[in-house]
Length: 143
Image 1 (cartoon, rainbow, N blue to C red):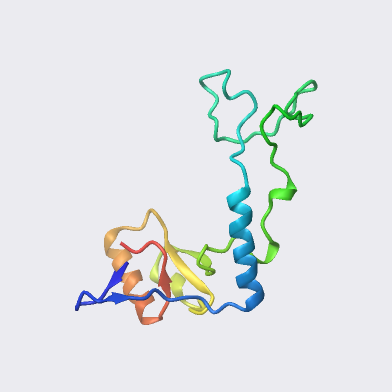
Image 2: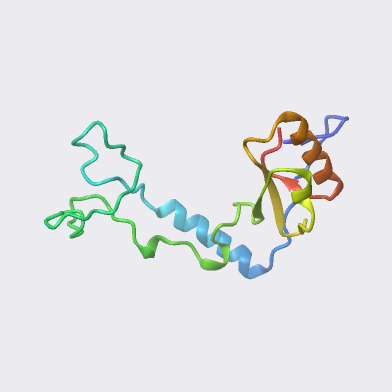
């Protein structure tokens, strides 16, 4: 949450979206809610296999590859989100990774928001956030 000096709540900037994009974002949210957690084949058998890392089942006699009902779901194209909103931040902004102040040039504050890279130090991060505030850009991972 952003606060100003009077400790009043300041509303975060929202993107300018058309109705179709807003509907597709809602549709993507529903799809993601129904999407199962895809588990790796026979993750329960071996301790060294992580459950959450997806690998396509490739065995000749693989029950999971044959989509037998008692096996976990296999990732396929039917679980994908709509193309127009794929890769957008849940708020609707296009996520742009920024490493320095020069990367802010040419960004559109109505459709793009910035995410400061993980390796950026505190001094440069503060400079980027101040410049983003001047340009009216939303910072997704503000400190």
